[in-house]
Length: 99
Image (cartoon, rainbow, N blue to C red; front, side):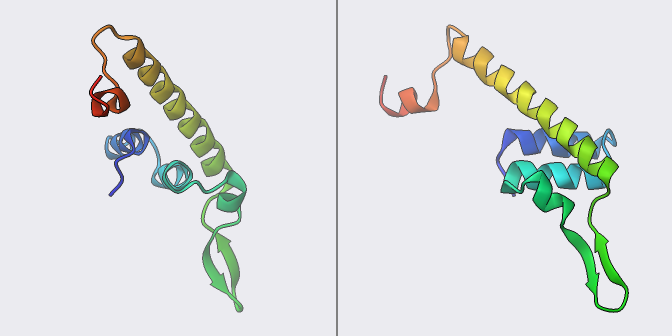
């Protein structure tokens, strides 16, 4: 379970079939777990001394995940900015302090 609204958006897109599963997985690990794109590029799905290693993601999946996570981050930042500028908006921190 993850409460990050960016991951929620990603799961929604995956659920509606708007992104491929591996692309969504790479973006999710990047957003939710902070894995770098380099770490994701070197992540193996299978490691075998007999058949060799099979990467989890191919280049296209990683490029798509990078673009997708960038767009989701941009949308999230715009939403946060719009909410903080709204006249009736009360942030969680000011609400907790009694302001």
